[in-house]
Structures are given as structure tokens and as C-alpha cells.
Length: 309
Length: 309
Image (tube, rainbow over all chains, first blue to last red; front, side, top):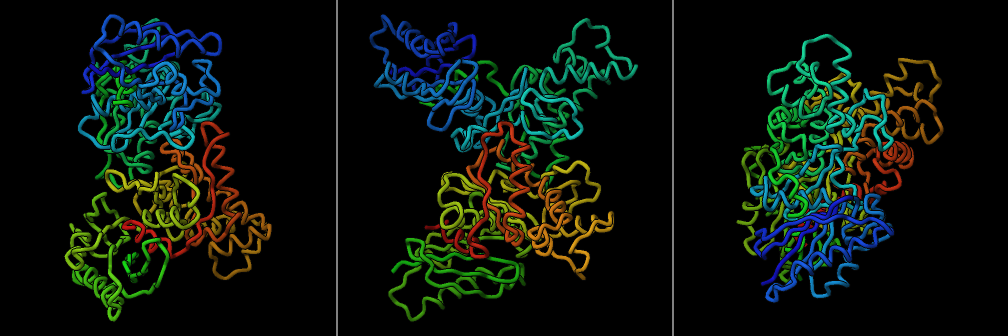
């Protein structure tokens, strides 16, 4: 039987899945990522993991291997620089191809392949064009149009986290710009804004009783009708919603799928997003659906495999 | 010989071009657009124009006809509503197909097909992905990725004129939103800002001596180092440049081609656009080229034909 593999390459872990030609997951496992020696062990390690898995199963043939990479990847699968893996001027597709000369090999940015995973097997199944936005420590994005990842000419496509929609911002984002969506709508941005709000006024809030605050605490409080938490999420989601409206005027997808840890907040996140999204559309009776992604942490591994399926 | 036709359907004029299968323009002419009776004459009139052109030339066979339409067109060529032509719930491709059953027929939004024209025969020839931005009475946009028009799920793709990047705006755009790019970077926006600047301060400017002011006057003055005119264009181009940076983070084209009447300002427009574009990019060493479009008013007619070539 022909087997296809998806490898989500993280800075600390490899997440590997084996799939049938119909895209059904057969097995999944993890291994450590060894980024020493300019990341030169990573590709041989992936090859070993796959060979070990196949050992003793003579009837299993690897037919394709797709990789998700935590950094910019051009449309041909070339990586100019990937700080998380210590790769510079590196062609992972070529390197892995040497190990499996008869396999179809592909590589894409991790957020882009996660978008492809959601598009094929997750929340985007019923749509022709979709964007995945992951809200976690940072904000990532990936776009799929007519079944194909849109990488862009310089690997910048889908970088919604670093558009600057908050013109009142006075603190720099980690990228050096002022007013990035990432700086206010990410998990850490939400916590930062909440702390500022707690300090600035005396409104009652369940959050005041907590020793340390997480974005999850704020979503939970909002679900319990905590006014300050609701207000905080409204403030934090507005710049992202504005960015989603801009993106609608750019490539006009059918759906935005919200993933990442913060998406577990469900309606406490979706409601302010939908409200501010509509406010910023040119024609308000049209626009994309905004829904929660479905595949969680497996999206990248699944989408990595979908590149070769 | 097989002939292909491109028809740029404007609210007052039809612009028709006849092309060889290699895309060479053989002839072009115009006719009036008759939008009476819910625009029901337009398609028969186009058919008559083409039949008349072919009359007496037995060896000429119409093989394809492409239309550019001044309003939203979905990916299948369907028009829900087009106020400029009085069309509602109309399928121009089907209607023209009845007149020429053996022809390939296509329709697209006029800005989108103009982008295709520039991509195939104009400023975008050397690029794989491109966006045309027309700066005239209003601001329009069209996107071509890998040779295909990106229309979007709701016909909103490329609508850069109606994203709201100017958070200090207090006057409504014609679309009803505050702070639209269109309201400040269009020809009328530039004139409005210049008038405000003339009223607000006493700086010397050659513009003060003019009875009525056009965007061309302001570009000419800027070329002559008129400080106030240079400042005006800097202010007016900033929101558009910001929008172009947002669009780069969305679909990341290789080039922005600036067309429309105001693009004749050349470097007086390109320089502030390039400066503010770089300021708003996530990674400033990458990004698109910004150049002037080449085909002028013929872009739409040429691109209309390119849809069927």
C-alpha cells in the first residue's frame, strides 16, 4: 500500500502523520527536533523516522512526504532563512528528495499548510476559498484559493498579524512597527490590554481575583458576562477584524477560519470579530463567514501531507 | 482568419477592439452605450457592431468575445446588479452566447480585465503576479495571479479604494464609510486636500494663482518643487500606500501597476507611494515593485479580449 506522510516541523518537535491515498490518518507520532549544526540533522532525522515506521512492513511504500516549516518558504519550497530551525539558504525539498528519490516531496510555511489542512479536512471543507487565522502567542495566517496555497511572491501572503491597523498604538510590536494586529489581538496582547484596563479603572471584574491572568481566563470571564472582559475582547478583536475586512477587499475569501489557542474562546471571540468585520466592509451585505477551525494542533501535520496528496 | 474581440462596456461608450489569435490589435472603434430599457439593448448592439465589422469579410471568423463590465461580476460572468448599465440579475455571457453560439464568450469586472490587459501586454508583462490600481475620479483595482484574474467570492477582490486606512477622517466617503482610501487618494480627494491646505496656511504655492484646481495641476506643481503640492501628494498617497502594504501582507504580488489619470503624475505620485509603502511593510527588505501602467484607456478593451485568448 502507498503511504503519504505529513511532517509539521516545529522548533522543538517533529509531528509526523502517515496517511492513505484518500487522506485517512493511519498513525501519528512525535520526535524531538535537533536544530544543532545549522539544522543539518532535521532532514536525516525525518528520513529515519519514516524508515523506522516502515521497517518490517514490506507492503508499505512511501509515495509522498510533505513538510510544514515555521518560517517563510517560497513557492518552490526554498527557504532563505528560518530562525526557528537554524536553516539558511536551504532547500529541504531537495535534501529530503535525496533520501526518497521516488517520492513526491513538498514543503510550505506551517501556517499555510495548516490552512490547507483545515480547507481539505476541517472547517473549510465546504468552501472554495478560505483563510486560516491562528490566534496564539502570535497571530499567523494562511490562505487557500481553489485548493492551492497562496504563498505570495515574497512569502508574505497571509501575514495578517503584521499589518498596522491600530493607529493609536504607542508601543512597538516585536517586528519593530507600531500598531500591529499581533501586538493587540494575540494571547499576550489580550492579557496586556486587560492588565491596562484593570489598572486604569475600578470596575468590578472576576479577573481582579486572579493571581496570574491568561487569555483563557479572559474568555471564560466574558462567557460569564464579566463586563470588563467583554470590553477587553471587543477592543482586542477590533484591529484584527479590520484586517480581515482589508483582506476581504484584497482577495475576498468565502470564509475565515479562526484557530490557535485563543479560538477556544468560541463566541466570546467570534462575536466581536463579526461585529467589527461588518463595520469595515465596503458593501456590508456581502463578506465572508467567520467560524472556528476544527483540527487543532493536527492541522499543520494534515495539511503538510495534503500538499502531496 | 479567426478574430477575437474585446469590448470595454462603459456607461456612455462601448470600446471595441479586434485582435488576432496572437493578441495583436487589428482595429478598434467606439459606439454609444444605450442603457435604456434595463440595459437590454447593450448586448444586441455589441453583436451588431461585431457583425457589421465582419460584413464583407467572408474569411474573418469571430472565435471569441470578452467583455469588461463597470460593476461586480462573479467568477462565472454573472451580474447581480450593475447600476452603470441598468443591469439586474443578468447573465451577459449567456445573452451574447445566443448571438454567437460558436464563440468563446467571457465577462469580467472592468478594473479586473484592465489588470489582465496590463499583465499580458503592458507594464506587467515581466511579472507572474500583479495588481493594477487606477487613480482617477475614484480608485479601482484588479488583481492577476499566475495569469488568472482574482475576482473573489463576492466580487470584492482588489477593492483597495474602500479600505479605511485614514483613522483621522471625519467626512464620509460616497460608500458611507469613514476614512476610505478613495476619499483622500483619488483625483477629487487630492484637490480637496490641496484646498484645505491652501485655506489653513499661508505658505507660498503656485497653486494659489489658479482659478480652478485639478490633480494634474498639483502634480505639475510638485514636479516644479512646489512645497505645498509635494506635501499634499505625500499626505494623499500615504493611505493608499498603507493599503498597498496591507494587500502585500494579504496576497503579496510582485508588482503594483499604477494607472488612471493621476498616474500621469509619474514620480510625483510614485515617490510618496514607495516611501510610505516601505514604512508599512512587515519585512522592509521585501515587497513589490511600484510602477506606472502603460496601456492607458485601452487596458480594459485589451484585457477584455485576453479573457478569451
